[in-house]
Image 1: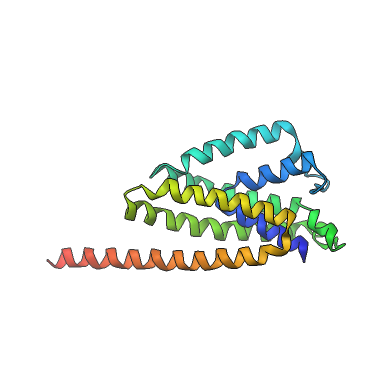
Image 2 (image 1 turned 90 degrees about the vertical axis):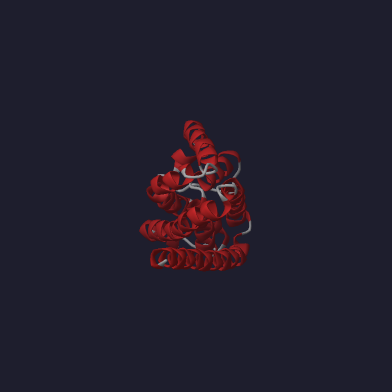
Length: 202
């Protein structure tokens, strides 16, 4: 159970920002014993790999806060974030040691699929909401929302590793916010269609 919660938390974080959970897992594995990377994932704690992830994280941090550019970045990240979700889900064995379970490590494909799907769902919601935020706030809301997403990704990554039992609460909160965000997107699009139709008839 704990292994799954850790994986779900990390892949959710990857859906918001691909590089934050990768960096957190790599740094924690490099400096502590809280995360023990399974065979085949040792590269994630390598100093050079972490340096590259750091550069990509910095670029993501800047680009995601610029209106219009953030939309292009989201298109590119459609492949990157789910892949990162698959990596962090299947690479983390810290929680598996808490419940003495080896099932996830014996079935790595399951971790990859769950991680990819989870990160992709979060990414789709994020990339659907952002254009609405930009349009409704004239771009002013982009850096604010992006900062909140980055903070949420970092918080979720840390919770997933050190307090996986709280992941359920965090996921419930994310699910509620995602549902409210999708409702807002639908209302915004419906309003725009109505206004467009009114202009056409006028």
